[in-house]
Structure formats: C-alpha cells, structure tokens
Image (tube, rainbow, N blue to C red; front, side, top):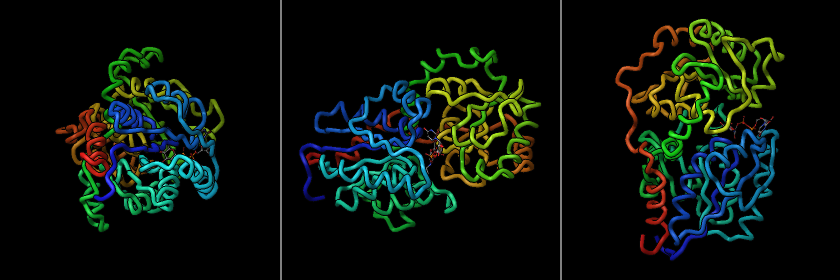
Length: 369
Ligand code: UD1
C-alpha cells in the first residue's frame, strides 16, 4: 500500500455494551506501541451506568476523548445522530484511520462518516453473517464491511463470507476474538466476585438468561412463547435473568414473573455477569457475544434464535440453536440438556487477538509494517 505512515492517529469507536470488551484490549495494545495514537470515541448509544459506565470501570477503559451523547431513538434517528455528531470529530481530528467494532448502529454510522471523508475504516469482527436481513445487525455488518479498508476477522466463516462477497482477502486477516482477550484477562477477577454466592446459589445449580433482540422481545407473542419455555425449564433448573432495558419495558409488571425459580435482576456489570455465567450450568440467550463466551468457558449455551452469525460456536463450541418458539426451545432443552460432547475452543481465541490486530494494522498502514 502507498502512503505508508511512520505513526498512526486512530479514532476508535464504541457505542453499545458489546463494543467495550472488544475495545479495551485493543486500546491497551495500541497504547503500548508508541507509533500509535489512539483516541476513544463513545457515541453514547448506550448511556445508563449499568449499560456503559460500569463496563468502562470493569474493563479499565480510559474516559472517552469524545462523547457524542446520541442516546436512543428509532434506527433512522439514532443513526442520523451518529452521522451528524461524528462528522465534525473526524473533520477536526483528521485521523489516519477510524476503527469500528462489531455490528451496532454506532459501527455503521461512524464507518459511513469516515468512508465519505476518505478516511480508511478498520472493522473488527468483520465478515460475520447470519444471512437474515431482518436483523438490524446484519444490515450493519454487510454495509460496514462493504466500505471497510481493513477487515479483522474472528472466525473462519468470516473470511469465507467476505470472499463470497468479492472482498480482496489481502485486506482481511483472521485475528481471533478480541472479546475473549477480555474474558481471559478478567476470568480470575470474576471468580473472586462470587456472584452466585451473593445470590444464594451454588455454582453449577442454575441457568442464566439474557434476552434483548427486537425480534424476540418487541412482539408480545414471541416474548410470551420464550417466557413460557423458560418457566418450564425453570422447573428443572432455576434461572437468573439480568434484564436489558429494552426487554424490561416489554415484560409483564414486576412480580408477575419474578419468583424463586426465575429471578429477574437489573443489568449486571461485566465482571458480575462473567462471574454469574462462568458458574452457571447453562445459558439461554439471544446475544451474539455470549455464544462465544460460553464456548470458551465450556458452558452449554442455548441460543434463542433460528440462525447465528457465529457458526463456529455451534460447529466446535457449546452452542445449540434452539429457535424462538416455546416448542423449539423445549425440544432443544430435552434433546441436548447439559451435554456438549466434543466441544472445544476455536483456534486463535487465545487471549492474544489484540496483538494480532496491532500487527495487521501495522502491516497495512505503517512504513515498517
Ligand atoms: C444494541 C445493538 C445490539 C446489541 C445490543 C447490546 C443495534 C442495532 N443494536 O441493541 O446489536 O446486541 O445493543 O445491548 O445497534 N436503553 C436504555 N439505556 C441504555 C441503552 C438503551 O434504557 O443505556 C433502552 C432504550 O429504551 C432504547 C432501547 O434500550 O430505546 C434499545 O437500545 P438500542 O441502543 O437502540 O438497542 P439495543 O436493543 O440495546
């Protein structure tokens, strides 16, 4: 590549909860190399303390250099706010590249601003595809990858998907999973947190639930079917459910669900959740990242979706696609239970992904790369 630089000024963007555990190890690795000058931009897509501030604290993230305060809204409103508020930041700070992670609206919004200003976009977690365009994240993934200059990929399916879409693989690198860097770094701290004990639960005696995907929680019929399945499973295995704010707004009134066998909690911080998940017998979730974390922890995962953009967690890890209806979830629970024969950790999910990202960025943009 021409115009290689001696040093690199980078804007690194995060906005929503799952972005922060990917940015923390990467910023740490970039800051340790004097050729990089990373600045952190928080769009403010997530703003509650439990959705954002507690994650910064747990992960040791520095205060953001720029806070855009975009807040909630419809997809169009939120993305428009991101576009409007990020453009002046790029114009003023004139970075050599903008780095975005994951698949949230902040990822796409900031990538679009950068690409239109001819600033190269680096996309971490590129290439993942659910092939379900009703998911807002799938739109964000496809579009971000289409305008990214350097594509850093977490699992082999990502490279295959990018190749199929005509991306020159010279611009893509399999770097492993940054979220697992954070998990490995904080595993011991999470063990010491003893969340299960604080909740009066014995390790291995309960399941954990998370649920926030619009397709699952926004339509009352879907949510009711999932809750009915969970209440049945709770008769076998008590469940603990830290509730995302989107979901909280859709659940029946307080007290109607909450009981000894299905306990609702406020959202947890990173360390608290990692502690609770690591001691669980099983996890029931519609999150993307939790499919990966359970695979590394060896905890059986039931993904409450019909597809996953993270197929390695099913092919190699502990993940099972359980669908989203009462019948499909209960059928998966009865078929698989707590057994996951042959599950293993995917290659390069070893806690060293940040170093690989830094090497890939060096090779593409720096003179001695
Ligand atoms: C977003 C991401 C999703 C990611 C999830 C993790 C998109 C399209 N979706 O979904 O990929 O898995 O974050 O949590 O970017 N709210 C609060 N406090 C907050 C943030 C949100 O109360 O700090 C409430 C608001 O009512 C808001 C709703 O949650 O309208 C949804 O927030 P939003 O950022 O739009 O999407 P998420 O569902 O969190």
